[in-house]
Image (cartoon, rainbow, N blue to C red; front, side, top):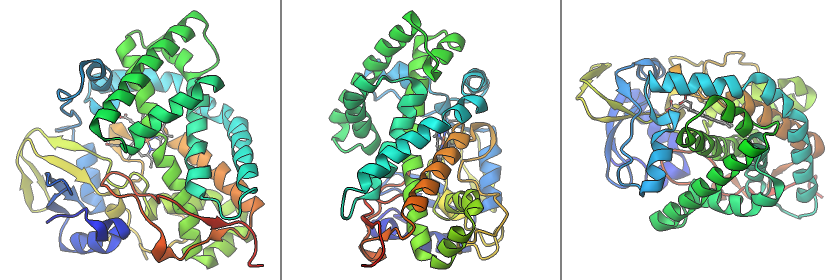
Length: 385
Ligand code: HEM
C-alpha cells in the first residue's frame, strides 16, 4: 500500500494504528513508489535495531564526487567495525561534560529568541524559535564563528528542507563541504574550545571529519526543532497536563520524554537493509530489502505502553525508542534533551498562557517519511484579552 499520502501527513497515527493492529511488519511503498518494509511494533523494532545482519550502508554512487567521500564516511551510514571506531572517537570528544558546558549558552540563545518573539503579535514558533535555536546551538558546539552563520544557515536550510530540488541540494552540499574544509583548516591553525577542534585531535582523516561535522549539523537540527514544536502542540491538546506542569515545573523532563514517545520527531529515520533473509514475526524478508522502523508507531504500541495514545506526565516509564536503539543510538540525545528542557522551561515560564493561534485542524505538518513536525505554529503569547 502507498503510505505517505496527504492523510498520513495530516495525522499518521490512525494509519499506523491500523497497520500495527494487523501485524509487526508490512510491505509498503513511499510516496515516490519505492517499496520497503515498515516495522510497527515495539518488540520487533528492538529486534531490527539490534540485529547486526541489518546494514546501514546506503548507495552514495549517484552523488557528485566531492560529496561522495564525505557522505560515505558518516558513521550513521556505516556498520561495525568501521562504525565502532568512528563512534568511539567522536564519543571521546562529544562528552557529557561538553554538553553540560553548553547550558549557559543555550539559555542565552533561548532568551534572545524569546525577546524576539515578544515583539510580534502572532509569531510562528517553528520559524522564529524551534528552528533557529538548535541551529545556533550546533554552530556553538562545532565552533562556527558568528560572522559565518548567515551563509552557513542558508546552505543548511537547503540541505535540511531539500526545498531547492536535487541540483540546489547538490550545490548547497558542495558549498557546505568546502566551508567545513576551510573551517577545519582554520581550527587546525588555531584550535579553540569547540567540538571541531576536539575532533581534530581524534580524527586524522579530513573526510571523516567533514562527514562527522555534516552529520552533527543535519542530525541535530530538524529533529530538535520538531521536538520543541511538537511539545507545544501536545500541551495544547492536553490542557490538564499543561496545568500539571504549571504547578510542578519539575515535570519538565517527563514532558520531554512523553513528547519523544507520543510525537517522535525522527518519525521513521531508521534506514536498514537486510543482508540475508530475516524473519520478523511470521514474515521472512529476503536479503537486499530496505527496512524502516516507524518510531511513531512503535512508541504507541499498546502492548508496551498503557494508555499509549495519552500524554501522561506521571507515566514514569520512558522505554520509548525515539532516539533509536543499539549501536546507532542517538549520539546527541543528551544535547537534545538539554535543549528541549531549557527551551520549553523558559518559553512556558515566560509565556504561561502560550497557545496556538489557529485550530489544530488548520496546522500543517511537514510531509515526507523521515520526520514528524509542524511546518509552522502561529502562537498567541498572552491571555485571551
Ligand atoms: C542517530 C533521533 C538529536 C546526532 C539518531 C537515531 C535516531 C535519532 C532515531 C538513530 C537512527 C538509526 O538507528 O538509524 C534523534 C532525535 C533528536 C536527535 C529524535 C532530537 C529530538 C540529535 C542531536 C545530535 C544528534 C542534537 C547532535 C548534535 C546523532 C548522531 C547519530 C544519531 C551523530 C548517529 C549515531 C550513530 O550512527 O552511531 N538520532 N536525534 N541527534 N543522532 Fe540523533
